[in-house]
Amino acid sequence: MTYGIVFEKIAAGELPPGYYYAHIPVLGLTTHGSGVEGARAAARDLIQLWLEEKRANGEPIAASPEFFFSTVDVPSDALQGA
Image (cartoon, rainbow, N blue to C red; front, top):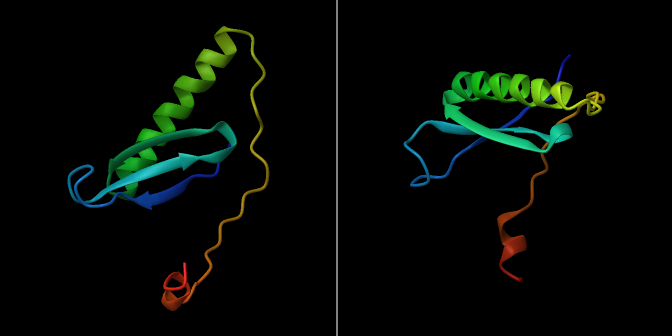
């Protein structure tokens, strides 16, 4: 099975420098790791554990839909009027 992962660099002070969150949106799961590859490995481990738990309990497993990711630029002055 293939699952989409969104990586997000963790803000300074929350964890040591260079750590990333790995969000798995379709499963509602988030983990973290050192660098993108560490976060990817943590996500793979978490997904495997999650799937094992679902199977052991006879629960349905959500299939990953087609996954897209994009960004949008917002001018910095847009926040000044808020």
